[in-house]
Length: 182
Image 1 (cartoon, one colour):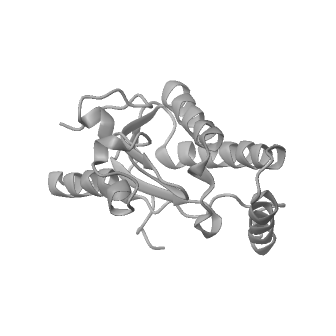
Image 2 (cartoon, rainbow, N blue to C red):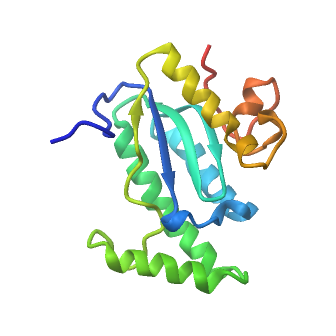
C-alpha cells in the first residue's frame, strides 16, 4: 500500500488541501465561509486541531496543521468534512441564490457516482496531506498558502486577503486562532 498522501505520523506537521466537488466556488458567499470557519474554530477548541497557516479560496482550502491530544489529523479532517458538508448543503438549500439548483445538481451527481455516499458529495474525497519535515518545505508551503489569493488576483498583497492567516503573520487580527511558525 502506498504511503504517499496519507497521514502517516499522528504527531506530524502537514500541509493539506481539500476542495469542493468540481472545485465549485461555494466560498464566495460570507455565510458559507462562516460555516467552515466556525467548524474550524470548533475543531481547534474541542478536537485538538492546531492550525499554523490557512487560506480559504472560493472552491478549496489550504492549511498547515497538526493535532494535539487523542485524535489524529485524519480523524479531525474526516469529521470536519462530514460535518461541514451537511451544514453547507443545508445552507445552500435554504438560501435563495441563482446558482442553487446547479450546485445541488453537481453535488448530487458526484454523490451518486461515489459508493461511499448516500446522496450528495460536497467535498472531494482526498485531502492530499503532505508531511512537512524540513524548514525549507515548511517555508515553501507557507509562502504558497499566503500567496494563493495574490496569484489568483483576489488581493495585491497576501495580508490584504481576509480569509487567510497571512494577516496574522503580518501583525493584523486574523479570523482563526493559529500558532505562528517561527
